[in-house]
Length: 178
Image (cartoon, rainbow, N blue to C red; front, side, top):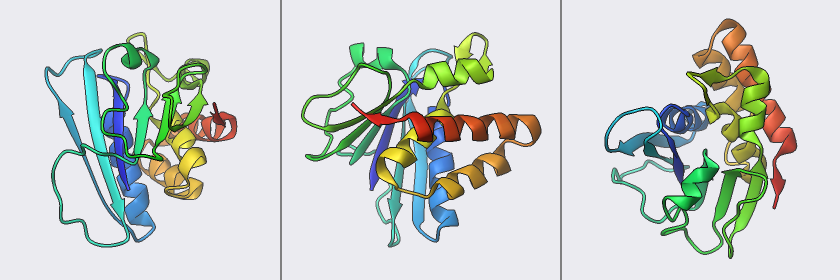
């Protein structure tokens, strides 16, 4: 499975791809995650990628034809064609209650609302990476909820780990097909 994450610098797209890959490895799968971005600054468009397989992964290039798209910022829909190259039958998981991509299976979650309510905000920007992972697991089952929660708790210690775990769980429970 190939997954492309679309977001803005500071929202955690790269971290989300890394956490997803770690969760897959925890389950005995093969995985890789890597970013692609231009100018590194908060708010600039960012793309990150993850590959997950039951066999060793021999390709190490950017993902042009993903199976799944994860959109961390709904305003990205107005900047880029997030569905570019998305395979037929692909899945879009979006931080939105209204935005969708016609012709694909869409899942929506108010990740921004969850992140703000839980205090996952840095310099005014809601950090929605773990929230979107909860929605992704709900939409696809690509890894187990327990695996995602495990890597979140390993990577974010103490109170931050608990808050991010709550974000995963709330998004998992509230993500819906739209």
